[in-house]
Amino acid sequence: MRVRKDDLVQVITGRDKGKQGRILRVVPETQRVVVEGVNRMKRHTKPTPRNRTGGIIEREQAIHVSNVMIVDPKTDRPTRVRSEVRNEEKVRVAVKSGTTVTSG
Image (cartoon, rainbow, N blue to C red; front, side, top):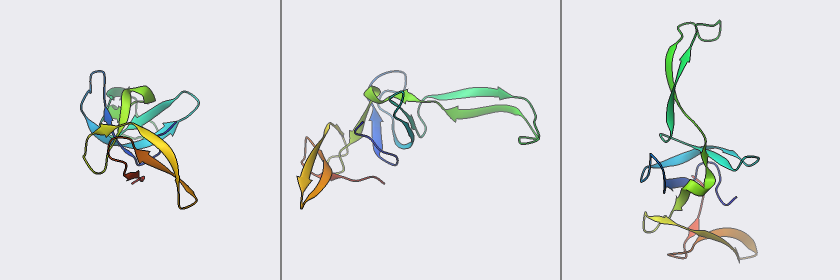
């Protein structure tokens, strides 16, 4: 997978198409990512010792990695990413602009 935690991504398909957000969690086993503010679902919870109030909680659910693209830091638009070796270090490079993509 070419995405990492804290990458800025844009959703390219589905109900939240066009929304941008940071990756909160990456699940490589199922090729899914949790993106901040995207694919929010309501969860009805009972009061427990851990959560005393209960009620309806909104939280982000995982989305497949093929439905997001990394946002190019130079143009602020979605782009594909490739790996290159620069200065004897492997880095991720935006295909459209050629700039290095960093997490966070």
